[in-house]
Image (cartoon, each protein chain N blue to C red):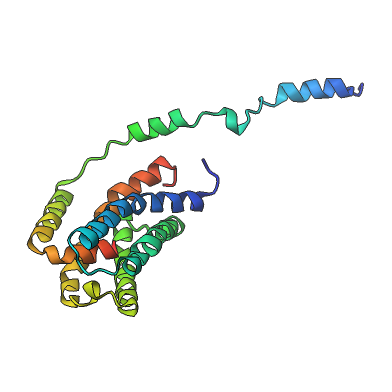
Length: 137
Length: 72
């Protein structure tokens, strides 16, 4: 299991958000087509579907590459990811005109610490578990 | 010293090296199951409090759920 450690780290990283996309997509579809919430789903889904899982995979590769130098716990490493994702997601939502995200920017101040906490726990337990199963760390 | 013949050389090599198993002959699934079983993760009390805070936050401020779903 010593072959291609970065590739395995990438797979362990995307293994957590990818199944969650099913839940997220289901919630979006129900909100859009059952409760008629005006979400432009085809535009809104691009970021969580394409960017987020790849960011998790690459962030786990970065964890493996930098762990020997930085000795940062995996939970803290994961909690740093929203610092990149939230501004990027907000900018993309602004560019694509996804009002349901950008209209309530004041909520970001509550969503931001919650996202950090969720990421901390997800990386500490779920990604760490996947890393162990795939022999990454 | 007498030089070994090709057959003798082949036999000596066979004895010296362990037999090589092809990759597809190794069943990785039992090893995977063992790895899944051996990890018994316990959630610490501080992390339980964080989980409770997140749950409370989602109940108190349901308007941030779409934003969280979008960002996460």
